[in-house]
Image 1 (cartoon, protein in one colour):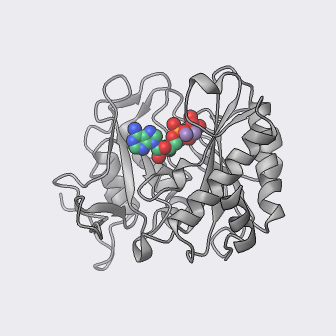
Image 2 (cartoon, helix red, strand yellow):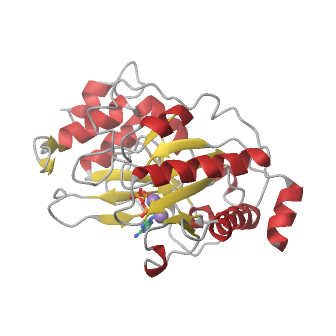
Length: 302
Ligand code: ATP
Ligand code: MN
Ligand code: MN
């Protein structure tokens, strides 16, 4: 049956959910979470996740047959994925159109296609060459406790504050923590990449027993990789409030700096824990800040 539309407007939540086929299919076998529950998650967090997705090229992680089968990244629309998505042509004309999510209809259509995770660029369609956020992705080595991750996030926060930048913390839903820094979109990928690389290398140089700024697993032994490579054009990071394709159906969840000290683990919030959680990132979307030129010059020379 055709979905009901509110006076020609967008279909409501019930109409969107009614489009889900095979809704009882178990996607997360360990915790019994179904495809319908994935769609319900995205409707429940729509107001929280959509401002992060707005205009951003996104990649999906899909698990059409559930986590027991193959999962894969995808960054272009599939045939049939029309409603609720926009296309972003590659300005250089080298790649096919990127995709962006336009509203709740896109979230639910994605769930219908087996999408579990949403990963976003650091820039939006209005200017793909001027990032509006910088991400520091802390990747702890296997077996390292979460206390080490908390300490890393706090040290980075202080380093950012020293140059007048405010960062926001998020548990990734996986193993680590991201610090997200909103930017005013006036600086280039080179600036943001160089600055974040400089801070990551600075941490590693000051405390080589705890941090590395290179991806090599061999060099990570007992340390945290400060992954600054999210800050490159076309690189992505998990979007706040995205579900993760991990066994416990955990979610990437924004937290306060106080919660950095108390949250038990990076995957502490599961799909059931986020329904009623208010967004704690006060001021995130109204903050206009840019990387200090003097600090940037200093890091480029160091
Ligand atoms: P965790 O806390 O477990 O590290 P994470 O989301 O930070 O979770 P990472 O492996 O550190 O996972 O990856 C960081 C980001 O890099 C991802 O969120 C994703 O956007 C991007 N990424 C990782 N692997 C791929 C891939 N194969 N293809 C495209 N993007 C990827
Ligand atoms: Mn990570
Ligand atoms: Mn990483």
